[in-house]
Image 1 (cartoon, protein in one colour):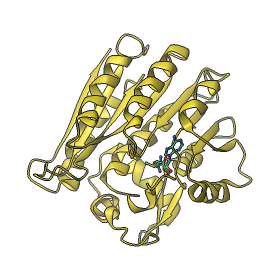
Image 2 (tube, rainbow, N blue to C red):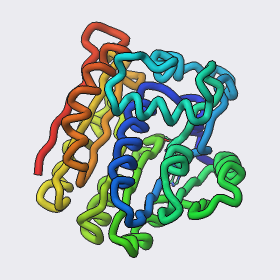
Image 3 (spheres, rainbow, N blue to C red):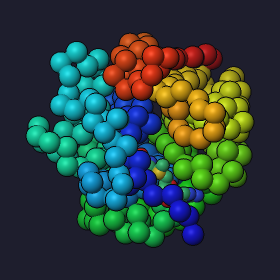
Image 4 (tube, rainbow, N blue to C red):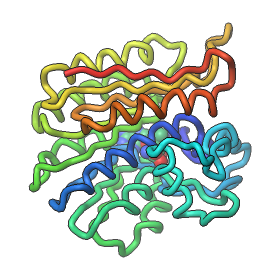
Length: 282
Ligand SMILES: C[S@@+](CC[C@H](N)C(=O)[O-])C[C@H]1O[C@@H](n2cnc3c(N)ncnc32)[C@H](O)[C@@H]1O
């Protein structure tokens, strides 16, 4: 049985980066009328109550530092905070939206979401949250093999989020193999992969390996956005920050992130060396 529960980490700096990119990708897709398919391979429970999991406090140094929305928030950050507001209203933070709920809020009648989740408790919560909503398909199962049969979408417009817990070492290799398969089948896929910044070789190598898999294959290039908020420690434990590596990013995403990442590093940084960085290529 998997031990990872996202409820403990919901709303932390890594969720902020991930969801901020997700919101901007959805906004871009919504600019065209034609429907799209979103596939969330590691969906989680969909929403998390603040204080709902014992010892849950990571959100305090994540979205908690951005709430209520600061007046100087760059547009992409403001758009993400609008999604948080959509489940809370303007008052205190009570709920933290997860990726499938963020997608569900932004998708239209012609769009669809396929969400995979392996943990039965999180799956039940997600099913309850999405019950009766049109265009939503919640799957109990492994998102890696579940993804390729859904590609390419009939409209050839698709957004994929791969957001594993990296609790198992195998996740690193499975993510890379899945990205290769996806781009081979559907080189137009807008494909976003979350990668943790850890003092662990596999985590340090994965962003560049993903970029190498995307280079020259993804029709509209790639982008690697990273946000490091904490310094490395002698004991080598802890999440220092994270990356979002994106294949086929919309052309507006790079310039927007270039303004958002330094702002986020200043707000969410836990030491003077905190930094947000952006790399992009074809
Ligand atoms: C980081 S959390 C997901 C958070 C979610 N994407 C969000 O942004 O709100 C990872 C989730 O993947 C689930 N999981 C782990 N391995 C999986 C697999 N092979 N297929 C589907 N779900 C998996 C875990 O139970 C956990 O809920």
